[in-house]
Length: 219
Image (cartoon, rainbow, N blue to C red):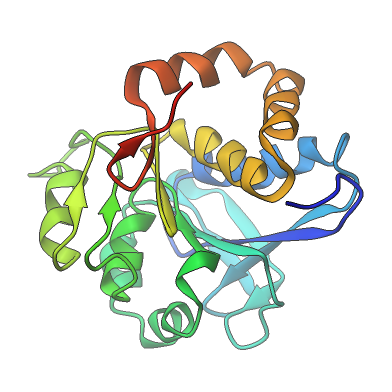
């Protein structure tokens, strides 16, 4: 565990049609966390450095591509409707395959991209629980098929070496959990209070749980 003044960098991996809430729930939370953890930072990474068009049309600038991505304590793959194309991108998948499992995480359907890289094989994992829009099946059902030998669990966060987070707004919960892994649970709780999410964080954990593999972590 790091001292609160120690540096940490969280890589946030984007691709076309990532949901903006996944960017806010990662980069936005890290930005606010800097008020109490002054040396935490993010590195936004895409297949290539440059503009990335999110779902809904918002365009953001990724300073890094996978070829020049900086070393990070953890790389978080965001979710969005473009996950099937991202799962077939050889450069992105190659980058993920080169990372040690303990430095990988996902939020929402980003788990399906990690699964395509083989990072979730044999692990307990989570992702978005419900189908949305034109989706024929819920992502969590697809994940059980894509990740070989994996066990899926409807949860806020599952930590089975690779950290996977639930869908949509649960991106915030997963980011807070990762901050807790880096700086301790008390730091994560303080960031949750800072962003006025402490009650939601506790309620989501109570309703859905944080799991270490198949084991529920005590609240």
